[in-house]
Image 1: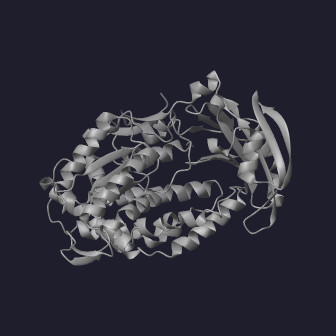
Image 2 (image 1 turned 60 degrees about the horizontal axis):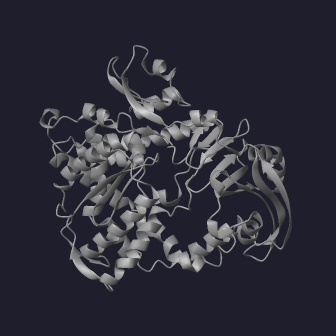
Image 3 (image 1 turned 120 degrees about the horizontal axis):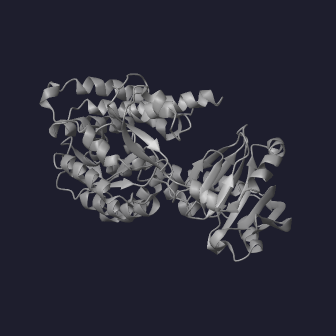
Length: 507
């Protein structure tokens, strides 16, 4: 949970693109470095670099670079080696490890490439990481960002999407969101620009394999990378089934991408076209890679807040909460949600921006703009709080009930806690749990701080008992399955006793 609402990466990218499109007017013709074909574009190379440079600063502000100089240098060295053999070696490439547990990698126009520490925990070798970097380099060399910007230059859907978003935020109690929808319409449209299409993803896969080959890595490591993504899908589906939830949807913008099954099949065929024998390729660098990531944070960090069982600790903000039995914690980028067992109600906690007001009454009035209501002063574990129930008018002009608690937390920072539910019946059924969750908001105690330690990746020899033996001392919830997942054998296969494997420990 962070201090401000995080812009989606797509929004950051579009904002930078819009600021540089004036350089290209209505478009120019360039030769694509990969295909060798001429194409009309609203972003020449100068505009690409300018857009990437601007968005890079916002990405760093949003995610934060992982504070480990040695790991940053390791990834940059590998990235520069790959980029030097790419179709656009002349660009000033920048490679950054982001301090995020998300399993993700992406690139911005102009040569800015990012991997999260989250995805690095699941790579097995330097060659695997090279596959990830090579794929993202491919997006840049093939000018995919510029192509999407050109295709969607007049994305009229953005205005409609923004109005829908504004109406939704209004319904969730964010007053004024509907009135400002037009101001962010082009930002919302960024989703259509930043999400690559099927052919572009497959082309980036192929370019990643080519750049691996040019650097004497086995192109079949691209298959390993896609298999990691496929195993993540399988683990998420298995976990949902075990918890009685429906499997995660792959709809939305992901529907425009090739499935990992399709990518796996195509990359297996493509990598087989490279006729070298394994002896012709360089060492995949498994030991070098495991040494590089040893000690890296795993999962949430102290700066983002830590979920430990039913407890949530945020050392940076100085507060903690505990979910009722059977509830789960969802630590989002801009809000914390304590979700009930039925998943139809939640207590949503978010920070209040300073401009919302100096008092609890100001915050309630400025955020909800209620037409009527009642406030009750109270305390939560010694912290000043105000409970409010009332009515407000939503964007459609209808009266809507509102209830929320405003609390002044550690350091004088103000928080808003709001119960939300699918419908009135679900809200009433969850009422006692919602009040219980709210009542746990507290200043971090000494015991809380002792428990609020980030987990880290270590390497150990695999014992004779295999992953079942390692799981006995692991802090992970589904320890054996997750240990198999981070070591690349979730879908089958075994490693030899004595072979170095990754484990997650609580220092």
